[in-house]
Image 1 (cartoon, rainbow, N blue to C red):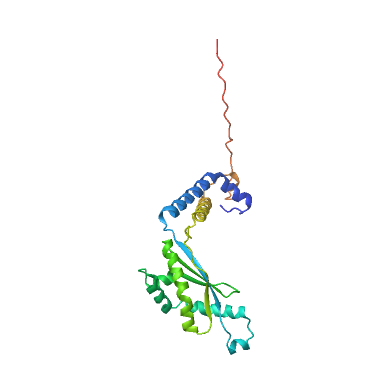
Image 2: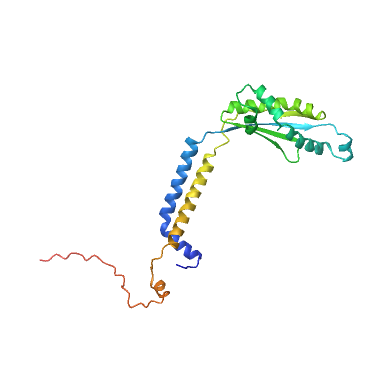
Length: 232
């Protein structure tokens, strides 16, 4: 039926179906909780930081860059260098693990922190010890690799990686809330689709829209219990 989608119309459709919406939200939320708890492998993240510094060459002097601005520019370049295959092949050799260099590359993220000369290195792995050791291996080898390639400039480890105590993912509370929201949306869509596809006539006003005269209406009669009167 063609109805105006006003708030009163929406509530008139959803309120009678609130048990279905509630059950759907809770059910999908519970499924998301147990799926995140038991079926998703936890991933741990270890991180450490490098500070980038260096001497200015003539070109940079002409640009009148301060030491901080120079560090910011160098950090962008150094981040690209540390993402190279050559560097990660060396990391794979020194790590003492069975991971190939491209596998370690996929686990690693090197981020240039905005408006600083700092590189943030993180490694994600299902084993917290491996994540920590790989991060520290990268931090240990980074200064020598940067000096080899760039010649000018140095990298200093600010914070080495520490063993992560809790997994970075999955976030069970977040997944549960997302699951409940999806269950709510699914139920609401189902209710609206059911109403839009329902061609049955429920009121006399709807029947008049088709030009069909109404001959009469059967009134709704409330039944009342009549108390038993004992006869003597």
